[in-house]
Image (cartoon, rainbow, N blue to C red; front, side):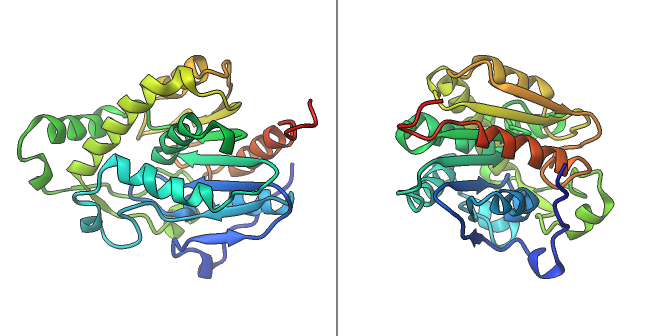
Length: 266
């Protein structure tokens, strides 16, 4: 198992990155209130495998939580689509998503099948844990949902102490944004049978943010099913930076390596 290095302090600020590579490319999409940092160890590993890695900021991110007010789930997909098209011309294009980013990745694969050759879905936010789900329901069902106060998040849902300290994720989030996340989840759930790209799904067994049942549902219902499902016994939600991040990197790198090059067969 190849060890991926801890991010250096200068890389811990959540900035976008574009790591040059060979003929293949990967788009790495972070979660709600997060940043490209959540997937940086995986990006570093894929870069070592010769894959260009583009880690952008999704709409409403890069500033404080107030920036997320008024952002719709369609804005997240639209911004990610722009970044996906930046990778046109790659021999194979992979999309990696964490939590909300996994849902966006599925939407892109459904809408642009000719531009997505493989998916890696980390802790997909198809089904939220009871606390976040209640906040999202309140935002969706009440006329003042967009005016509700910020929802404190506390510490990142990461077991690794150092990565929790380094992670620049927002400490609070508008309740309205959680409602948009749930709308995105409902939309993606309907799309799943039409997603043809091969996929691997990775989820933490000790996740406090999303339910494992959502990952299992995606692996079972995706059009390219059955997707490979990897349950990480020691990890919390942000599996890309948690205690089993090297397992994540190994699994994703091996999965992408096994996807045939278009026109060359298996």
